[in-house]
Length: 117
Image 1 (cartoon, helix red, strand yellow):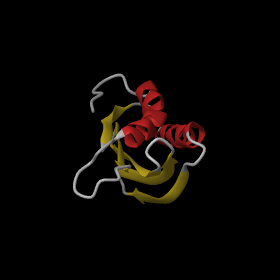
Image 2 (image 1 turned 135 degrees about the horizontal axis):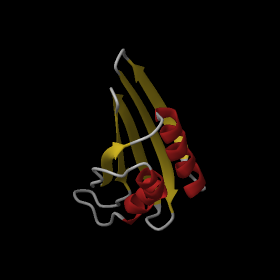
Image 3 (image 1 turned 60 degrees about the vertical axis):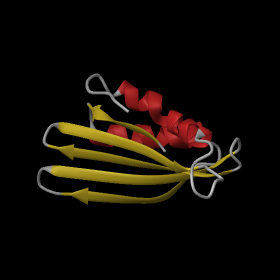
Image 4 (image 1 turned 45 degrees about the horizontal axis):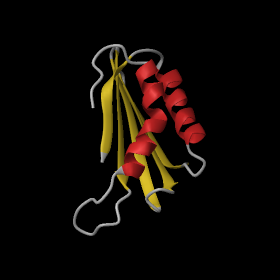
């Protein structure tokens, strides 16, 4: 599993659309598997789940992106999973890290405080 988690700054819809474009343009086999959106008076949450084929690992890998806004704060979490052929433990995470890297630069462009993995 690979993860990026941080606070981002900007327009919620612009950030979400930019990250989704980065996924689709960063991988030929990436597809949006499902999405979910929640709204409340002071909060908003968008969840996107993508999947792609990892040529290096010869398997499928998923990427879940959650964008959460409360008040003036926007947080993003991008987590990959899958990509291992082992039954009881992970032998490789190449596909996961590679999939996560398709959105890393875009997320970093909206982050100027609190970036961590």
